[in-house]
Length: 328
Image (spheres, helix red, strand yellow):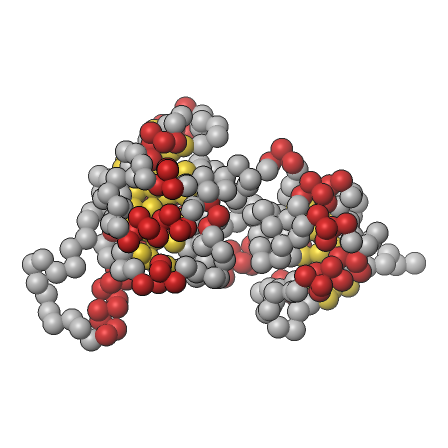
C-alpha cells in the first residue's frame, strides 16, 4: 500500500518551478493570490497540515503554535531568518523548524555594495534630477559625492553575508572593520584584511560607513539605538539590509534631518511596509523595498532547500537545515 503523502500548506506564492515540484511530491495547498495569510488563515493551516511553509511575512507566535493540530510536525520556513517564528514554543510542542541558510549571501552583499555606492555618490538624487527634467548640463561642482575607496567600512555582524560584503568592499579599496559575537579565525581575518573590534561603540565612532548584517533577536532589537547612533561621525553613512528592528528608526530620522550623519541606505524598516513618511522626504537617503535577496536564482535555491528539508523529514530523517535554539 503506497505511503500517504504529506499535507503541506504554502502561505505565499513561490516560483512556479518550486510550486510544481512541491505538487509532484506532496499533497500541497498553494495560494491563489500573493496576499499574506491572515492570522486566522495561518491558525487554520497549522491545524490541518503536516508541514507549513511560511515566509518572513508570517508572524507565528506561541499562541498560534498552541492551537496547531496534532498533525503539524514541521515548519519549513522559506527564508533564512526565523525571527518571525517562536522556535522555542514550536520545539516544546514537538514541531521542528527549518530554514534556508547560505543561499542569498552573495545577492544581499551585491545589493549592499550597490547601496553603499548609491548613497555616497548620490545616485538616487541624480535619477530624480533626470526624471524631473531638471538637468541643465555638467558643472564642476554639481552632484558631488565621495569615493568609497579608502573609506573605513564597519560591518556589524560577520556571518555569511557580512563576509561576502567584506570581500566586495576589499575589492573596492575600502578598509574593512567588523564587530561580531565571535571573532573570526586568524586566517579568515587575514584573507578579508578585516580588523576586529571587541567594542561596538568604539567601532561605530570611527567608521565612515556602517553596514548592518545581524539577525533580529531580543538581544539585537534597537542595537543601533539613539545613544549608539549619536556615536556616528557627522560625515558617516548607515546601511541596513538585515532587519529594520535592529535600528531605532525614529532616532535615525531625527539625525538625518539634523544632518548629524551624512546619509543612510535602507532596504528594511522597523515597521515593515509601513515606512516612516519622513524617510521618503529626505534627499540624503536611499530607500529600497526589501529587495536585497531578490534574484531569480536565489528564490529558486531557497525553494530547493525547502523541498530538501521536507523530503528529508518525510523520509524519516532530520532536516539538514534544522533550526536549534543554540543558533538563535
